[in-house]
Length: 345
Image (tube, rainbow, N blue to C red; front, side, top):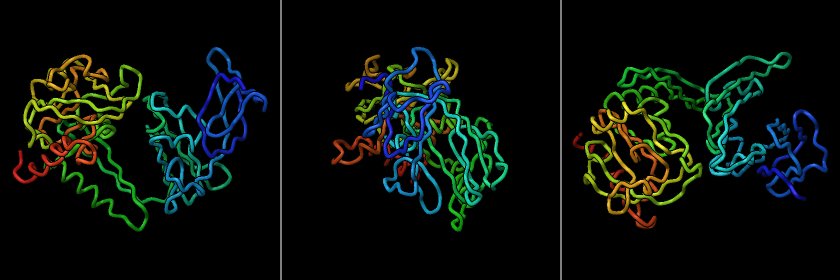
């Protein structure tokens, strides 16, 4: 069948399809393998409604939505979303998410990406619900959902810039060491403990305002999985203490939204305070537009906080830390933290 739209779907039971509220006849689509193909769709904007059923209890692949020790969890990277819902499950497709979770009373904690919205109980049966809205476009592999009977503790951490950040830690019932974990986190950060955010972790550090700036979609609008070169711009941080200034490291990247962005005032401040840790470069260390593959402002591949103990970077040093992986360049970054803990920076 000739088709105009294809959506990924694996192990899903298709119930119905509507286009702008009108049911789609069986002849208007096929579902075979991992592809739902629609024969014809409107040329302008339209609303596609798909009702499907997945079976997390039977999902033993630990990919998509699955049941783990009584809680429903998701693992979407790299292609798990297609086990959860029909979708363009590709890293270069960005979307915002509005989610409503309904569950039995035995699963009172309902978590998802983004900002919390309405929550309460559904009239009739005792079923709690929670709504979440994530306004920031992201690929499907970053989607996350948890529903379970979990213990939690909440606190507020104040960054060095004075901004309060809400923190929440959730664990299984009966393993409630949340208070201890929260106190340890705050003590570690307050004492200047070394913190490294890699790729998505870099994004988390910026969104939590532990680091300045933001990570935007690559200017190529493509997901990049490749080896790149970065130049060490400072050795004063916990994670570059044992690396030579100006040294070029060969590390892998795998991201769709890694273009570093900040306003000019912030960029100038980063330069002045020696907070730019890495820049994308050629093998000889020359910073060029071609080497800056994702469009990061000023070719920035990593930054640190003013103290130098918190570092975020898009490349993956842990994937280049053993001869079996092809290079040990990343090991220099990881062992620097050990030196930092021994002598301080």
